[in-house]
Length: 566
Image 1 (cartoon, one colour):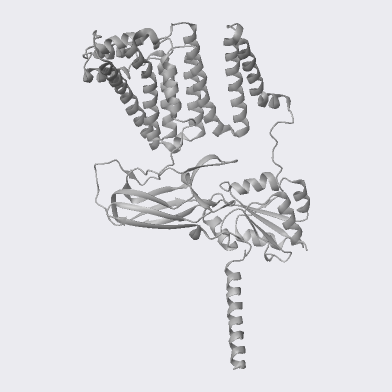
Image 2: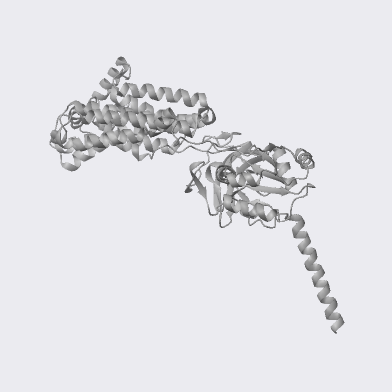
């Protein structure tokens, strides 16, 4: 009996040893605390008729990037993809974005699919602990779907991620209210109110409100449709609109529009067309809801010199962003903001209107600075963060200097405002001062390690054979890896780390493109995602338990290096 028990225990130990060896073969980085990508983001799909559902089962502690999900049909047509709202996410290197930290279901409406049609689905995600996976691509086979000509289709074109507006669309409401108090618009409200009422003022408060609201909604409808048309056109040319030359051209156009707000010239419809629209509007019957609605819709097309510039600026940015629903909502809020003072005048008469004066021109100039913020936002993508900060600084100095000059016209209690504006201008000028005088506060460039670049497993093996008795460190880097940039900025720039690596052969593979060659290298090294740093001994063999996955501070990385040398 004892002999049988002994043989059974021995057999169990052998099995345990085999399973352990197998785990080491398939997972060379047994220090890794991250799971393979298929476990982090389990992907599946199902199709019922023309409805396809894409499913991701997101593991706790991981998340998908909303802007990295793209769907491209082959031999098929699909309705425009509507992405669900994600959770706000922000990091130092990529700014604000949206993520899906929980399971995701993405419905896709197929309008036509031939036999053998497929959808190519691309997605990317990271672990919250600071570990990113390369973009993944899956091919989804489709069942045939009969063509449907009732709705617009997307034919073999990748779905572009829609760019969020730089400001909340609610800002459009405030801009609309502000435009209402410009010298071209405010004096017109009593006249428009009388036209709406049809010369009669014996209406109940409810009827007055209904007439004014219907007029404003007619005007808002024109702007909303205009915003949707422009945004839809922008979606077709989304990639081209991101080109640096296009961004520079749009920025120049925004600057021209802003100059019109400062009084250098006027923008408006041709006088002949403006007269025809006005006469057509005047023929509508005042006091009736349909007639008043038509008046408002036509009024949306009769742009005065004060409203053309901000309206054009909003339309241009909506086209550049390509966000259909934000475009519609932004223009509706803009029109509604312009109509709020009109509703007040219709209900309560002219008593609520402030008297005309020089302050109205100041409001107009103030919106010129609002428009100037848009080219700075666009140019920041072209010139980079450092020059972007300088452009924001220049705009801030110009605005606060303008506000300070306005406050000088006032006396008494405005003295405090003068001091505040002057102080704000001095604070805003700091990046320009650092740039002009070379202050130590100027943004410092990150000191890079002297990496030798490798692009394939063959180059890596050749470099390992030339280590000359040294340990080799291989850094796998990609632009889409946030923690890789953190390594570069905070860890590899540390003097202690650089000193510890002075006798180490440094190799780096940039796999940003995620092409076939990059994937072959990652598979050769059995790498799940980034950041991953590998260490090889003098004979070119990977040092056991030496891989680094995820970000390490300079102190922790130095400790890891010291453990390798023991």
